[in-house]
Image 1 (tube, rainbow, N blue to C red):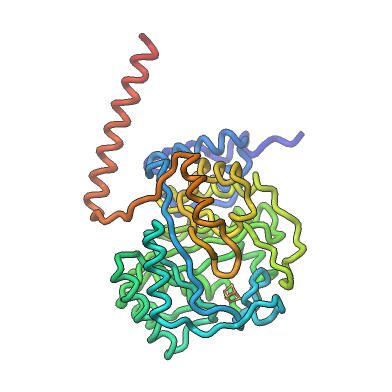
Image 2: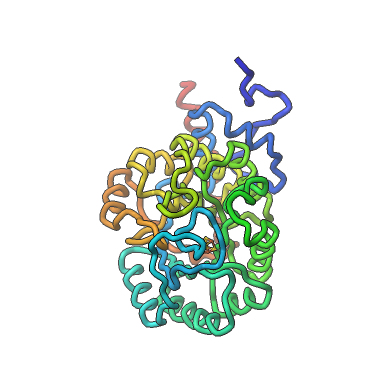
Amino acid sequence: MPAPYHDNAAVDLTLDTRHDLRHDWRLEEIEALFALPFNDLLFRAQQVHRAHFDPNAVQVSTLLSIKTGACPEDCKYCPQSGHYNTGLGKEKLLEIEKVVEQARAAKEAGASRFCMGAAWRSPRERDLEVVLEMVGRVKALGLETCMTLGMVDTDQASRLAEAGLDYYNHNLDTSPEYYGEIITTRSYADRLDTLANVRDAGMKVCSGGILGMGEAPRDRAALLQQLACLNPHPESVPINMLVKVPGTPMENVEDLDPLEFIRAIAVARILMPTSHVRLSAGREQMDESTQAMAFLAGANSIFYGDTLLTTGNPQVERDRALFDKLGLHPEQRDTRTDDERAETALAHAIQRQRDDALFYDAAQA
Ligand code: SF4
């Protein structure tokens, strides 16, 4: 039997769960984490998770497609690509009032962030004007705002930031090595450029990928390496399970073992300790146990609501029932300053040390 990776002395798996914020992860270190015994991996992920977050709080976002279909890009998983015939109707950019109405409903249903997605290669000037107004109107409701509009240059990113956009979503999708199998109309470097433009404009970054697209285990590790080597880490890391949509080139790809998916969530949590790791597309196909395991592995964000762009998402009531069963609650929007957050983290660390000391004293008594 080959020696497991975690016995490899060349790979140091010691982990400081409180302070390990690194941007120099090597691929073999990440593969070694993936290869840990499942229980050990989940235990480490829980340790990291508890050092940085309320373990029972889940950030809740709602996602609305503001412009659906006829996208010129050829992403092989996507029903919105104009390259494939998936029977999806084309829609024009939604009117601002309709978007605001949906945002209000999302807030009433418990969402703290409202994400708006448009199927564009990049926004055209006349569309951008409308989108900038949407940002202002949704933000005025007291929601955090997020958009995904395709590639943005430095000027577009600055204007979105000035309009008050909090987050910009742009996924890396997969590893640099496997990327060419999935998309040919834009490069990996294009994606990284957009992320850099978003960051330079002062917005928060939401970036993750899709698993189960026929990639090798090494590709999953390499995707997470790319994300974890961004400095700072993306504040939000959506980990999607492929939804196989008939009519796309990915409709018959082999299923990914759900336990491999959970491993990826746990590794993402360990590599990016302070990021929100989002259990994203594909949740509808997961049973409750798999979702519960994902939360245990460190996922602490979900999309909540009726639709996730164009693929189904579990209904709000089902999500509420699952939260009740697991004792989870929606995370409140954090309005503290960085200094206040640092003070709270320090107070928690001191309290934890006291608790540990008490535990050891009691155990030895
Ligand atoms: S994933 Fe985005 S960019 Fe790619 S085809 Fe779909 S809508 Fe277009």
